[in-house]
Length: 635
Image (cartoon, rainbow, N blue to C red; front, side, top):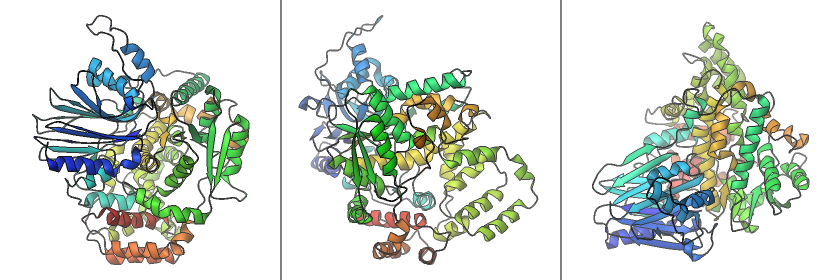
């Protein structure tokens, strides 16, 4: 796990480029405290920050050169099946002139480069891991950048006038001095409504994310970037393109899920540093810990960060799991004041604006301080196994075609919204006002923060923020047997990839902690998406997953209420953080893209306890302004 940066262009071996690459690499020093390196020739600069996880020797330092010196590589991530691929590369390839590869290190880095030498860019189809890597061919003067299938590891890039810059974090590009730090008005419009910007766009003009499962190629001789997709998640919930056989019994399906998840956990235990697991005591994290205990020869270390010592504390559930699996448990208790003291550094760690990041930072920092360099997370279980309420709402809405036959349904929605005077009432009204009511059209409404009236008043320019999310979900076609898998596709490609995974990376790497996510093993994802609704319909939370786990988890965990951090954000924003919040709201209200009066009205409605303006509907705006100030962005 590391940080990578690079600059590619015509004749760039000059003092300006040397200065730029150093600034970029220094900007992400937190990602790799163990070593740093820079390599360059006439057309390419590559730089690296290393967090040593596998093969801690200096042999694993990067940039990494092929044995003949032709290829140079920088790599961020982990290749979980590198040992299997290494064995294959150590044998001659039958029916070809390929000789055995003689390895000089024990790193997965060298395995990736050796695989590229043998199979070309198609090698990525053999990889199981989380990664973003770049390989420069000094002979063909070509750069290839690859990102993992699910987008666990980030890759940002800027391309203009034949100059390509890329990095693991936006802050590296900002510090390069090679780009204009200008806000994207269309992205701001989307961020205001959804508290994120959906890839490939970012909050800044001319900075993009390489999409998950994609390859970018840049040749010095060609002024155009070429981007191709090597893995499409939508294929696996579509009977026409799904490679898995339909017709397994429910018991056989549960067995397959168990096998795939167990194998995924086992693969992710490969490390040469102390590791552990986040343990909230929920189904997902408890499942990961239980399987770790089952396949690991060492005692598992578990970490629970608790903010609530009351009757409903998650710490009680975490302790049950720790006792059941005899883990070395660390319960880290933080008071709200502890959290508030660390909030400034959490905000400083935000690489791309997000309304959901500080919690991840606090948990990661506490875990890192306990001596852990790598931790497993239960992220992804809800998205794969219908754990959110939206799955049930979507499924039921798809079955209610009769709603479209209601006369004056839009008027009925307005009456309902006026009566309820709540966020959910506004969303119900907007759904009833749709031309055609179905789960597809209603999904963006469920993810919105503001009703259409408030949103239209906030944004000066007439940008339709829904276009971004609709462009993602319209590609996720399934048949009527896979409605829940369609929701999984929506959730994975919107909220999970653009909020949860981005926050998990930027906040954990801010303290040099690697986070691995077993539920996002691509083989498990592919199979889970192929399962029809008959087996997945959420009568009880994640029933398919809990049945697949058998008696691994106690009933007290399987049937417990879904919880999260119970932090008093509402009170903080009105009391301890009021001056900070108000300063940022006032500053933001003076920005060219925001309607001043509307924003100040929203803030005052929040302070006056308007039920339609909850803390989450102002906090992401406060973070946006703070991020703009921190990075001195032109607005």
